[in-house]
Amino acid sequence: MVYPGAKVEKSEERQKWIVDLKSSATQAASRVYETYPLQQIAYAKAQHVLLDDGTEHPMPKGIVGMAVLTLRVDDYAFIPLRCPGEEWGAFLDVLNAANGST
Image (cartoon, one colour):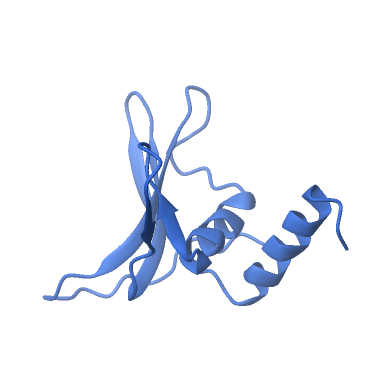
């Protein structure tokens, strides 16, 4: 269930996006793994952001898009992702399985 290629609408206004940086020495910049939408929807549904210094802040509201920015030595790709609602259910299933719940 990978949904790359979401349409990016040009806007004169500032927009909030969740952009996940990915790097690899062996994969092509265009490579999108099936777990990326699961990670993105988890970020989008988060209630708080935990910073490196241990402080917690409310998650910004008004997220309008999600993307992966893949960085390679000689290349990069900005890949917008569509994250349909079904991804949230799939993420919760994975989380419950990891925690030993059903």
